Picture 1 (cartoon, rainbow, N blue to C red):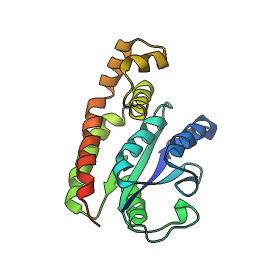
Picture 2: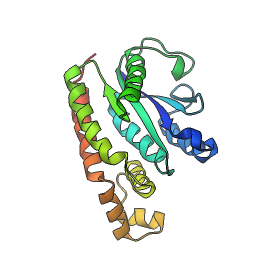
Picture 3: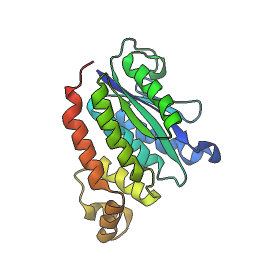
Length: 203
């Protein structure tokens, strides 16, 4: 099985794409090359093919990266399933993972939620998506500095708060405060739950 993340930038029309495009491309490139692993199309939509165990971490990192730009957010549907056809680019490939990702994104637009995951297991979907809905209550409200802290921490999980403080040219106490405001402890618990449960899901 694989996971596919399909997303679109929220409020992108109010911004010049040069304000966020380079950052987003740099973020997505950590998982592979375009167009075989990821693509940005129609100006503000993304698709990312990724191992199942990395999918939720990737989605939260992308969200945090986008929210480092004031006023922007991203809506993402994660689909977990098979890949039946590999095209020249990720947007031309197909399978249940791609289909679920696309339909999940469309459902998000109706429900006004920004992050949802769909597998073949309806009970698991209900449980995880309730957790994602609750987490979105604070993730959607991340300030730019909170989002930056989440992105850096998830990108460098073994880096101390003091090293992060040195990198950002702020005090260690400020790193601690930003981490608490971002509810990073809950984000890490959510990711740990996903890691321990997603491999039990079958197609």
